[in-house]
Length: 451
Image (cartoon, rainbow, N blue to C red):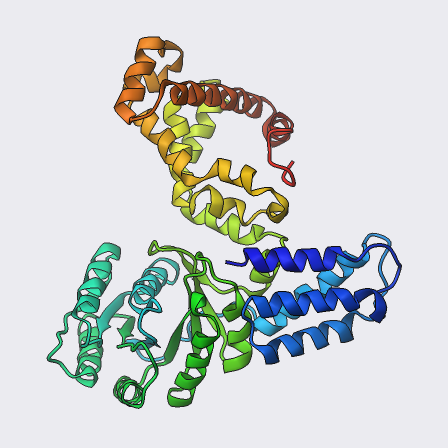
């Protein structure tokens, strides 16, 4: 999402060289580049002006410590200002009320409301251990009701049926009654969207709000829609007492302006962020982590949390015990590691959170795309159990059969076997010497900026 903004800001702050103090003269051009980068990222003009003025006021006259360069000193100031503009630290939902707590989701058509309701339900069930019931008051799109039903079924959340003949206000009241009957902790209510804001739509969503009396009213903001979406959020805030914003589609080709403008323009905090199409690609919004990613500093905290949450601990512990006993790292183990990598957002999702990845050439990053991982898994699946456990028996005729079974070339099988051999050596060193030995073994094999 922030690739182009990160590149422009990186060039801006790196233009500072030498000097022991940040002065108005030596940061004038940098501030101009900052302003242009933010405007090109579709950040609202008033927000850009305030941001640049604040950075200038705070940066000019700052002493540059011996351990820092002027560029690094400015990055610190820019980082702190980015965090301030995007809002306070991550905050979840305030569900302190007699159950069921009602959470209403509003927004424009196509912003991702229905998917967001499912993602939020999944998040509440897994993270907060809540019993959740979902319902759709979108009587204009029968497909939306069916979509929510299918999503609710996939995550194990309760679903209250509705149809296009129902009044949205009646659906809201029925959902709350059904939530009480099922002893649900939270009722999530999806509402109808429109392609454009109009008086009829705003009146209807206001009536649904009055009927449901939710403790949280969230506006779903499509990050790819830029300032149009932010302006729509402001209109919704005038009609509804919004309590927060959910930023969606941040994995797409968005320029990042919505994330930087939304908090300032609407006055409402960004509470959640959607990071992909899958139901579990959803998390609390951490301004400081997003600011770090924008500035190419990575997001190691989110990466650690992602690994802790989604890695298969049983398989990891089993592999660790196996290696400790001196048993080899076979192709079944490699497949497990590749599948876990995909479950955590794929290679690109993991690398994006590492510091310095903004400086890694695209050609290097493209070598680690998810398609290659899936192709490798397909090759391993095309093998017999014996071949997976004992790769040394894979001869020429077996390679031809494996390649044909996966729709790939023999060269791909050779490449996989070679890669496995290298990983086997690394794992062997790790089992003998621990993490330090692993780092020594990996030295020189990591992309620039990671080694």
